[in-house]
Structure formats: structure tokens, C-alpha cells
Image 1 (cartoon, protein in one colour):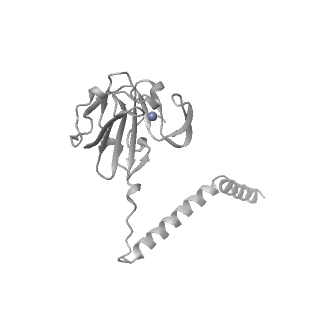
Image 2 (cartoon, helix red, strand yellow; image 1 turned 135 degrees about the horizontal axis):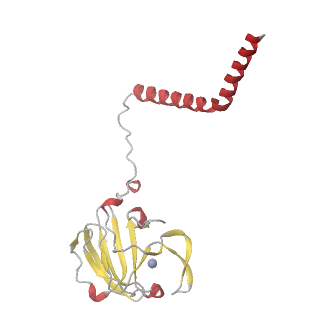
Image 3 (cartoon, helix red, strand yellow; image 1 turned 30 degrees about the vertical axis):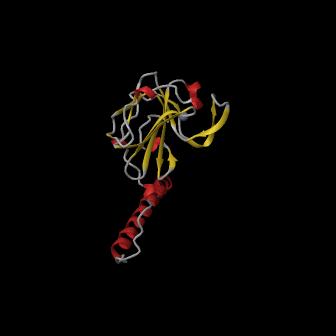
Length: 204
Ligand SMILES: [Zn+2]
């Protein structure tokens, strides 16, 4: 009687253990099975030859570390958002903002984000003074709302990441109510993309 009772409680303990930790054993077992199947499949897979599909280049993002910040101190006024409408105080209407706006003081320096070649410099009422830099890999950076007199570079000039290209101003009338700032656009193969993919903006 005493013996069987002890045995019974031992069984209960095992049951309790399985009840408590059974799922962990299950997960470990499942992971082992998946790993084994994966290894076997990998080892037995014969080279097929041909039909090698290269991933589309859009998926390859430049590492953030090599991009220089376009401003000395990151203070984001407006983030990039290609879906959500954001209110534009100046134009008094809602539109998507496919760029990042950095709050600056008049005269603050603006830097090239990456090595490249200046492809456009222009000034108009809406965008203010603008510099466009072509980079390798179909990437372009566009810097808007610059101070016109601060631009000494010319189209065709090459720049390094971190080179000063201009100073800040409130020259872009479409965002003039934002005050002096840099409106930075990044495009990949002609489409605007989120600059945060390339530049560390801190907490988003
Ligand atoms: Zn903007």
C-alpha cells in the first residue's frame, strides 16, 4: 500500500511535469525536426543550373552607416509618409509628404548625404533653391528650401558625403510657414522613397 502510493505520486509528478513543460518539449522537438529536415533537404538538393533568379535591386538598400546626415542636428519637422495625408500649413490643404523635413535655423549648414555628382541646381517660387545629386545605384537626393546665395557648386561638380552644399533658408514657399528647414527627398530609380531607409533619423 505504501509502495504503490509512492509510485502513484511519482506518476502524478511526471504528469504534472508534462502538463507544465510539455509544450516546451513539443517546441524543442518540432525545432529539431525542422532543422533536420532543412539540413537533409539542403544536402540532398542537387545544383539545378540555370534559372538563377537575382533578387530585384529595389530590395537592396544602402547601409545606413555610410550615409552622412544632411544636417548637424536632426530635428524632424515632418516625416515621410506616402499614404497618410499631412496638413500643409502654407497651402492650407492636406497632401502626402514624400520627404523628410529637418527643422533648421537660417544659415545652418546642409550637407551632401553621399558621394555623387550634382545634376541640377534651380530656384523657383514653390520649392525655393534646390540641389539634386545623382548617386550610384539609381539613387538621387534632392535638397529643397536652400539659401540661393550660399550655393557655390555647379552642375557637374562631384561631392563627397558630408560636403557642405548650401545653408538653410525658408525659400520654399510651399512650406514657408514651416520656417527655415531642409526638405529632403530620396528617389530610387525615379520613385520617391523614405529617406529613413538610408539615414538614421533616430526615433520615428
Ligand atoms: Zn517638406
